[in-house]
Length: 470
Image: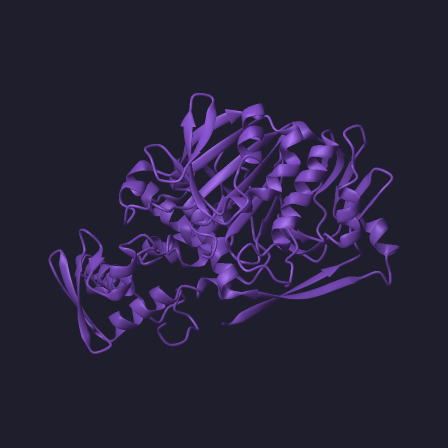
């Protein structure tokens, strides 16, 4: 597996001393362009203990490998400042858990210096200090050192180099698209949230949470309205936050999507959101503990369109680190229909440029600090599909298609997105379309538009600088 390498360079280590939390920043994109050590916020966090515990929880996820735990690299959390909140994000080393802490306006009292995204250093001494923050402790937060402080940190530069596996990068992109298809399934108040989370089984199993009055109850089999929870131990970082919990919300796939899930097991991804004073802590959990988000294929349908890459360029220029991206407003400003704006947001998600906020049912702008061009090519099924198209292996007739692949002919039904290949037999669409369905879609769309508007297989699309089909 090919790895990218993320190089972190901090002006000095993050510290927490005498009520002053200074988070050191690495390179990132801001409203003023790319900066080596951006400075975003300086002020007071009014809910010190909850914020410290939440930041520590995000860092714990970045350090964790929930499936087959073993020592490994930890990726520093990402922080985005969008003017009225701070969002801290991380992704587990195993690729199956996404975490985000949103510190909202009511919990912040200070100056927003700039907007943008960067990594923040979370080291062992800082983790130990965060764990000691009490409810009455003052907490002054600085995201990024000011210029005066940086000049006094000569010789204290902190540099780290960590691998970013393709699977990890792809998962970080996929989880945003998957979450955008979730509905709110259940909400319980603080005391009931505490009882539910403390009562979860510790073993690696799959259970379903079913709303029952004011409670959430567990069942070993799927039921109407239930939310799948694969590997309940992966919610463990919520436990230290329970003393602050006001409510717990559970999200799962929309009913229409769940009804199409293959087999009677209906295993599915889910998201769990803990409402805290002035902030929210969210965990998204992959469908099974051994299965990361990278192979879910949720982005492929939107990527396999002729216009998506160009539309993403247009929409990307209209983003300005908004806390909530309004599809209607972007459609009006760009002149694109809402469906194409949504597809463009998927493209931007693959490039790490948008996330998704379940509580507000909206995308938000951020710029994950890793190589966009590298991430754009991390969808081997789409690469293989375009190779089939280029080889002339696809024949479309109405709503059906025949795709010649590896000496066999695969038959595709476009209306159902079904195929006679082994991938379809194994997954039945639950992990995105196979390469044959994608290839048939590309050719069908090209034929519908005419030869002058065909798929540009040599352009600056996802195929750029990619290898042979996977």
